[in-house]
Length: 360
Image (cartoon, rainbow, N blue to C red; front, side):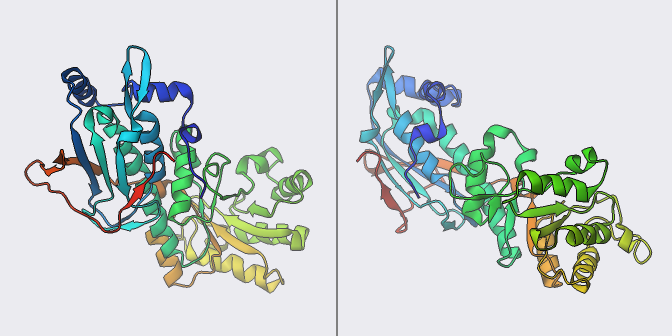
């Protein structure tokens, strides 16, 4: 993995805001001001941890943050003091235990006090997504999981969210931004809107896609008419070996036509629907066509499908990968090399930590 610099993440205006405490809790900014005024650059050790078994992510961005944000302003000139701090940490992708120390930051507190809100927030979000994705990837039992969470949060988050998802085990992402910080496949199918503007004719929409993107694997949504079996067969007959996969994305409010006579409660992408599509494709000799499912999938739902040996080849997962929390806490545990922490906290060494070099 290539080294990340501040320019990987932030433009110059954002860096200026970071340095001035624009994104920092006010009491951190005031603490920094007090210590600078009193000329007390006391060296402290900050210890960072969280309380769940998780997949750690965000360390690389925190290192970049400390490189660019450690220091102070002397009048209007930024004085970079990042060479005066030392960092020991785990790495992105490490599995961490509850209460395990993931990072120690040691140096004059006056120079980095304003960064606490930022580095805790970085770790919290990226670890949450990496952990959620790891649960889904484990449930999928080595079948590819696509990170389809682009529409469920603010778009400026996409680059880091995609990075965290791949760290957690996603096989592909859905936007160029999501794949911009890490080597990742960017995949897509055909949206329902493209089918609609082709007057609801899925085959015609797929033909237009192939004409415009002949080298892109053809994955076709087949639920537009709520007839996944019929539509899957129609596109398979038309495109034969050109068809890579069909995608089932039936609304959770609907029962597919192939199930309406047998199970009127089989809503959405039901296990039996997947079986029906697979059986129909195989009967007509289209065994190479893969099946992608999406729409409301969670680790629990995927685990259920896998336990029942439902013939899914790939899972598209979205909003469930952004839910929950992985809050981190930072505590002062040493001052000038001596143990000192608030009641209930203590310095915890971790042999798994390794030094991070801020300056070469």
